[in-house]
Image 1: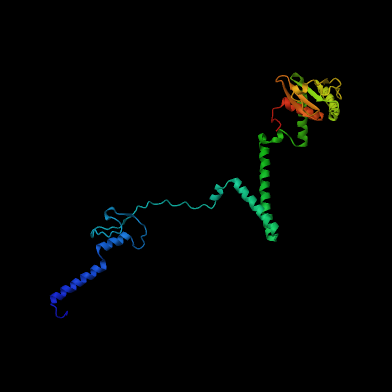
Image 2: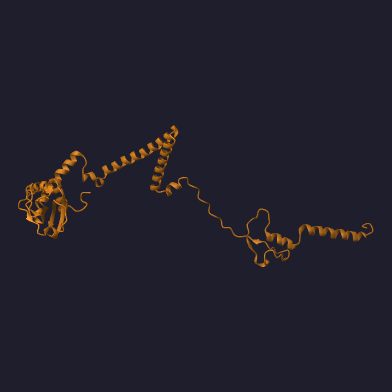
Length: 295
């Protein structure tokens, strides 16, 4: 059939067939638009914003050769480079208390493992952790005492010595201050002693209190709850409600209290048998020292 055709016609047919082949190879503009709309280009996985003039995605609308319905590329701002990881950053964010607890847990865990499975390796691991903990404690203790030596305002032993010689000096000074305070006690305070004849403690404490009062020149009002004479205090006066008025109606005996003539308050010195030094120290603390002075 091709032989019977006119040569001019045959050339025209060949041209049309060639154009159709090129057309099929390139694809229609609509197909090109669809392909771009799907954004299937190799290596491009970033989905941008659909261009406003293309209508709905997937509609297949063709706008000609000079319009493409692909996705508009989004601007990507350059991200600042991430800071390199610091292997010691976790130590800075961990508090000292948490680190101490971690060390303590590690030591306890190593000890538990050594107890449950006492192999040489586990016992050695526990001993190594224990040695490290003891070394830390030794360093702290040494630094602590060096700091105290160099900081007299932080040295509590200057206030309450612990050495034998310094403690003796402090005790002598304390005794002098205490005796001076007791000598001035009658200017403001009075001592009241409560007891009764059948009290075993009163039979021991009464004579001690008498000797203490005479040594320091103190006036004592002895009150007998039963109205009878007290051991060491034959001049004791009957109670007649005095104990109740002082707020000591049910107090155990022997009882020794201070009466403050300035404030009209009762300050209990103590209940039960007390030695002379103990009475002197309590009276001195109640009348001459502010709370917290000795601590």
